[in-house]
Picture (cartoon, rainbow, N blue to C red):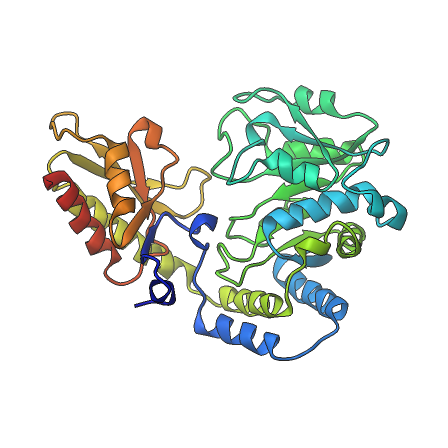
Length: 369
């Protein structure tokens, strides 16, 4: 029995990935111990933020970094920093940025809902989102035409939530931004390469700590030192309710250290073995089909996609199957981005021993019952 069952909640089988709605990730003993140790001593928080930024930057190649309570908080604070440039009077006005240069250009296909609307995160930092192009096609002229004297940054979102076709590439966005003397900001919250986007010339890159890193609840933004200085100052303004605890910072730093030394290829191989098991076993259930798919954003993440077999009548929709998976005990959560198309995906990364067998057993019960 886990701690959540002890307070009367059902155990959850996380087969959906590192998702905020399920608590994102679980902590290794090392990360948990680092968080406990951090929570049991005092420190000057501004000094810790500076030192954490220095350490994080060793892993990213950024000139400096600022630790935050989440990737979403990092977006808000970064935009606030770019608008106010660290000016206290302007910081005290936020989120009211009327009369200031405050526009953030984002491709329409990147203006997504990832659990919250991306435009909301922009507005929280005092920004005004300016969507360029259409939902399925953006060309460089759309980006150029959206830039005005009120533009403070171009914003590129790297996510499976985004439209994956017809968008302007990061490199083209970078070149347009720099040609206009503007920074390119990248939301790479769930990405697994912490050096890639700085190396590609992005000026500011946002990451989650709790996703790929499996750290404590945290995030960070890394990049050009001048911009990062402006971000850090926001903790004396709009960033106050987004502050991060010392224990979460220490957990994040330990997670970065662990991540650097992980055998990532082995992890991918093991996850693909789980996917193959699911595909083989689910494929034996009359009325269901399963196949291995790769993450839409191109990451080395593989999942088992389950659909109904049109040749077999089972009298059950995929919506009903998903509902019963969640209502069972334990509750099984699959990915449901394509549920309206009759598809659910099982992500092996968060699964623990016995989970894959439990998923197959429950599906057999649902289809048979």
